[in-house]
Image 1 (cartoon, rainbow, N blue to C red):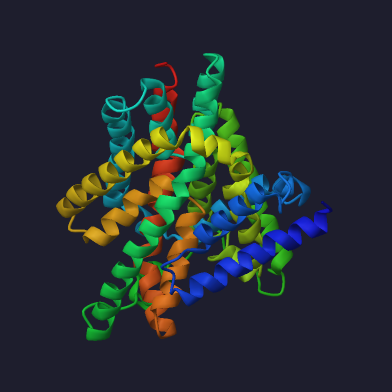
Image 2: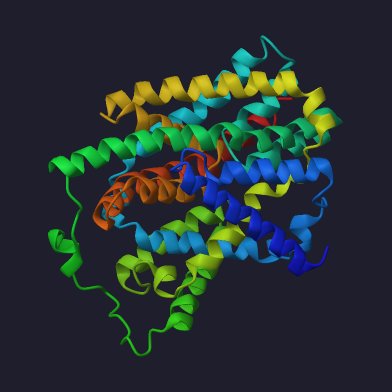
Length: 390
């Protein structure tokens, strides 16, 4: 398939997903719709297995992920990020609960190898999948390597609807608080930091055009990757990108909402989103048929574990059960799904610009932090330990 034809197919699928999401008021996520359409397309042969590679979009997705993480740092205020320590604890505990529950309870029902392989992957992402796949291949267990990919593909089918439904309920609760005057949008003038001078003075507007803003963002991304390499990637480079994005914005080097000011988010987000679906091309009907029982066991046990633990820990920190479960569900899809679903819910629930901003202000920082803690940090550490247990 030609590159332009592959891109057309991908963006049409995304467009359909957006329309379904809008029609369902974010109860059915765009990510879920796209997952189903892509999987059906691969299974029926309508889409070639090389669809994503043919589009050539994946060749820049890795770079754009770093750029977007730096951008996200520019929309999270340092004091707000520090204030999310409760979210950090809830999401980390939920991630560990999934892995522990699937491994220890799962092997009572299915073979230990399947429980071991699925545990860190269900609570993680691509890095955890690669670690467990290497473990399986090293042990000569091709079935476990296939199972690792299948678990990765199955995550979103649970995580996306759970997160959408819980965040939708949370958004309605927040909407009621906003309407009754119990809570209000934080206006810039309400914070002392808004008037605080930056260490690095801003560039004059006439010099701070889109290309200049993008250049600064890419330079920070470059610095982040270099620092990650310096420490032999002991901490994921995306974590460094987010951290340096926050710091450089606070110092004044980067603009707040950098990609937004550069009018670049509209093309960056779809390309990065594509990286979520790359494993679907290898999930054949035969794979699903032969591994359906262990897959269901892993998914059910993991879902129950993160839901129960998230609610219990959330109660300690006075989070609503809806927000707590949504935070825990971030283990199943991570970034950029956390960003996309947060935006979908706030846009579909709020009736005014102020309501939408207020809802997004309350849920997006929590979901972003949760996704980074689970997929980029905790699950990688868990997988790094468990990959030596086979």
